[in-house]
Image (cartoon, rainbow, N blue to C red; front, top):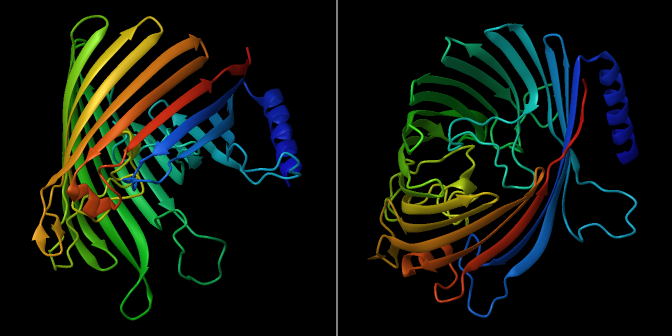
Length: 417
């Protein structure tokens, strides 16, 4: 199976190399060491954190012939040691992307197949590049150039587990059954404006034990301003509709202000509010905002306590943060403290707790070794509260920290003339 896959890739490359006007092949090898000692959730005193090395190995093929462009991204994702040194097979191979794009005119193209979807700051749609496997969708997207400075994307996705003769319950491998969305962006001088609307369909079993499909809607806008020295962004989103027959009423606000103090130093302030639901609220309505398909590791602290496979349909979040950044030549450094609070009330055994969840401090360092080689690392520490213990379990007095070092090799292997 493995050999036939690589033979197929080799045959495709040879075929497209002969026929294509342009061929580009790039690769990425990205090993990452992590020591998780309170990552995502509070550790208990006496527990030992885990240390491991994961790796992404990826080859990207892009072929262009007249108005047709094809893209393939083959990857292998592993943790060092998950396959025996004498293993005869490896099931960690997959296509991260496999898409075709046809340019009908200068203003209109259609892209379909397995592909990344990434918009604005990646808060609602993102490729989650931090995760070694990253995220991609099976979708069709129409790209429309509406003006010199405006563009509109319209996307559609439909998921099934297999070919079927009759409609049967979808087991939700992709997390959704279908979605339709529209994203519009326009720039005017130093200003940028985006509008996003998503109709997200999820299957569930209703009260009659029948398969049903509910839709939720996420609507919002994001604005940016950048004059080279000062950068500002703000976004507002609302969610409505149904999930499993339950009504949704949730909202989001986020904003950031960054100022370049000098050629090397910059400072920033940020705030994010994601609505939540009181723990003693007995209503069935969903009041907790869900960032859907965003690159959530990028937000709310690098230790991923919130919205990275967790904290959905919970008490929400208020995140106040600051950034002090330094960049000179090949070296970068950043320190980012976060002050976390719940957006809704927390209760423990009937008693209301403080809304304060704690403080996280993230330190990130980077160095560009060569044109196609980078090394990055960081250390984060969570100073949790009793309220965070109620939400996460574990103990706030434990040494809750996270350390990582990652090396990325990203050479371009071949570009046809």
